[in-house]
Image (cartoon, helix red, strand yellow):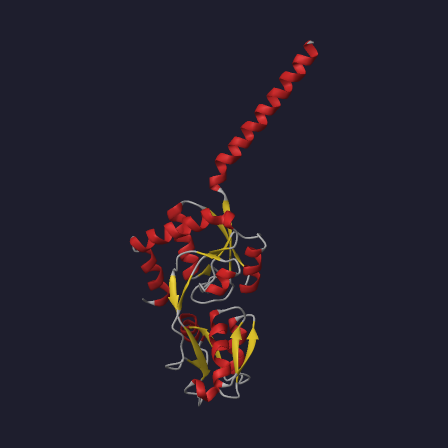
Length: 256
């Protein structure tokens, strides 16, 4: 009988220890470190500076929101396609990469935050181009970046104006295709293109009257279980807009 009582007591103590450890773990759950995926080269929203640091509007906004809301995160620079795939597969909790909020993405399972920056998309031409309007692109090739709002903008116009599109996985390669004369134009988010031309000395120009109406960028999750992270992003975004930190970040990279 004593042996049985000792055994029962030991089991009870072990159970209590497990429950205690579980409770402690749950209490620490609020301090989880989120994994956030992003693009690699999308100036001025995410890029590597001359000091080898990963910086940009998206990078600074995320840092300011995390500081405001008191959460930790690991930012993984993966490239656009890989970043999207990581969030879809549950390998990352969220995505911040200049992702345009659009119905097609929402329909396919993207869950967006409030918009944090409104951007237009523009056609971009090589220096010295004789193209001055969409009509001048008839019979020519236009370079686009896979899965972007710029690609959608070009696709929506190609039948009307008679041009074809060539798809690329990253912006720098797309730009070079135009500079080398393989494509007559490319389509990019206007702030990204303006920054790339300025900082990279690219032989490209942004024409007047060849831009879209624009749409907001949003932070995105693709699993409803990550709603808490999305709620924190929205709350933090509202706070940094109210306290002026948001405007400081834009001024730092855009001079706005």
